[in-house]
Image 1 (cartoon, rainbow, N blue to C red):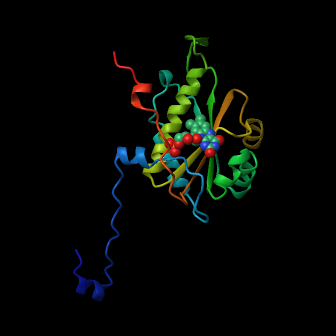
Image 2 (cartoon, protein in one colour; image 1 turned 120 degrees about the vertical axis):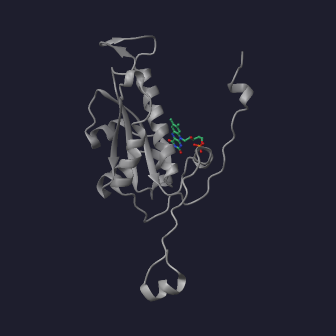
Image 3 (cartoon, helix red, strand yellow; image 1 turned 120 degrees about the horizontal axis):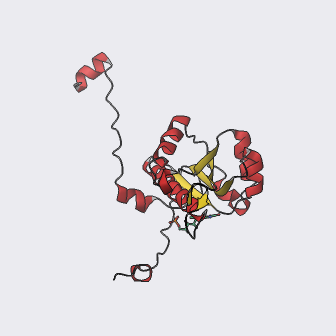
Length: 197
Ligand SMILES: Cc1cc2nc3c(=O)[nH]c(=O)nc-3n(C[C@H](O)[C@H](O)[C@H](O)COP(=O)(O)O)c2cc1C
């Protein structure tokens, strides 16, 4: 401990308060699709590794872990992705990182190479969505913001990142810091989406 007077004499600096981690409910309610990002901010590779490590906790069919991520951190790839997301371009111009999400076909929903039930590779998409959910929620918990973009040019992204043909490209995800507070979207009433029996 450092008394104020002693601090001045010894140069002992006060410790910066560590921000408290948000609760799960705070993460859920403050996570929104962000369509304007602060310019000039960066995200480190260590932070990205923390983010992707969180996705490894997501459940998947027979622990097949079919999700993969291709991450644009260089200026060259960042600028190239901007031209492959159609009308989303202006929304994510200042997001420092773009993440391309894919899943490997023939893993989730398959048993010894055979489709296990009616859904087949849809289970890969299911697992990929779970993994993406972990990603966007962990991002919010770390103070970042995201936009999932289904409007993207999959063929161009496949060529840019040399993504193999056995992987299905799902979303491009922008990652950055919000430049404006989003509006809470309307949500369907519970009794429309949940039936208790
Ligand atoms: C699969 C998927 C694709 C989406 N594609 C886009 C997109 O291309 N552009 C966009 O601005 N928002 C896109 N969104 C964001 C949705 O519009 C958004 O999640 C929804 O309106 C609810 O708002 P919220 O995320 O703030 O809760 C997408 C979301 C998902 C899950």
